[in-house]
Image (cartoon, rainbow, N blue to C red):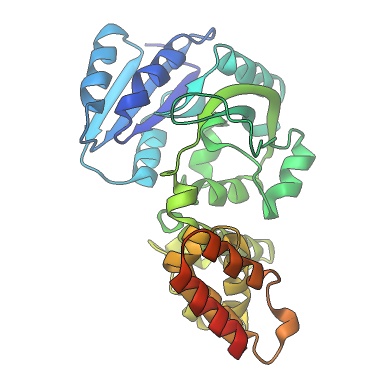
Length: 334
């Protein structure tokens, strides 16, 4: 059997309300030489029935049903099982526009020095309506994408098409970087290949209050800071310790792990900067990061992340008086 050009890698976990629309959008692509590899990661809704019904109708669909193992394990399984030269990511709640795959394959075929290609997106709500507030225009050129490596957002994960050979070469997704596994992957791939985005909006990307960036803002920002730290180690010619990790270490161990005094304080400040405009994250697991950061900078207030008092005000407006009081007291003492 001839291998397809593309493996569409779709990990599903309780995407029932949106899954049929996502599958229809893949099957309706103008470029049809693909396999749709679906890992149902222990869904407890009707996702399995929806997947099996579509698989019975279209031979391009290969379905794997497994107990819940998490997104990173599912993605690595799909890399291992993929037969296509290119791997196209999709999520079970997004909608690909009909020419997405055709446009991406044409670009990658004509740019062999590029290994990762995303697209700009159309943001939509839970109900599928277009969002007009806070638009995100991902950088397009390779130079702009690589310049955004330290700040982001540089690529929209479910819009990406990648060369499978490169994914295998870098070892796929790393278990330690849960909630920011894509960002860690971009940093490692950027050391081997060029990355870009098409300027066209070829994916309807669904935003919801339950998405990772809202529910797990603190571990996401800690993981992103650690991914940048690991990249700095690699670029300096030193071993990347996170190659051996299944999970990220407690932040207070960083000075000892990397043999550099002040690393814990620096990473803690990065996390604080990342969550400062997210009162929900601050009120939950972010508050210890902020109070310790204030204590860290007690002798050197100039090194304190700016905007902390404004964050107190946001907490009050968001109905979090307890967190606002704790943070304000820490600032007064500091």
